[in-house]
Length: 273
Figure 1 (cartoon, rainbow, N blue to C red):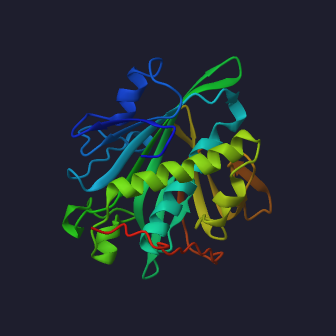
Figure 2: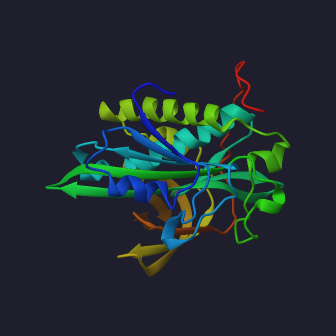
Figure 3: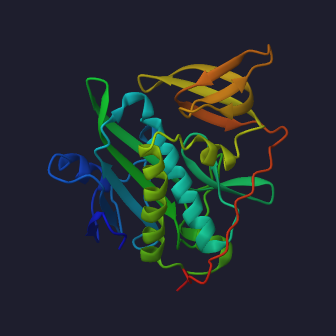
């Protein structure tokens, strides 16, 4: 396993993030909880996320960053980049991100979801004292095991390639790549450039449902032109005004897409079983 991480493994658990949250004061910085099956896995906006046993990479990371609160979104960005890089490295596929936290791939002109990220933080006197980052990635699910089709249908590495992948090797890669980007953030380097490079959202017409206190507040529609240093999505409305979106649910409405490419070979490492 990747050096520097304390790793707890479970065959079955309700939620790796909940387990870490209950033990957060007892566990050190850089603790990971990994499960073969979660009975109460959670996604954004209270959505349920469940995968058949042994088919997904389900891991939660506990960090004690002691960063300024403003840098909190960097952790979601780092996790997203690490996840996309890991899947691309293992499969050679063009893996991208949909703002703010979906791991996606474009197949036949249609967006498919491969996973997501959920972050919970604790703060004290303007400092980010604790963060738990849940990462769920669809790896070895058959097409029949995937959730029913929604606005963004789901897929997995296996459903695309037909291959089984070694989840332990994928976990090693994920933790290693997270470390690399985290160390740069510790040197006050925003992950914004790496994140923006693989955001499929940019250049597209979007509708953002802006959230406030966990509830929809209002909608902003326009062209997603970029993201700033803190991860806010910049939307240029039809009136020409640029609106920064801190938190929300974004729907792609089509339009011209900036072509992002993020392909990688396995470089001699075989991730398939």
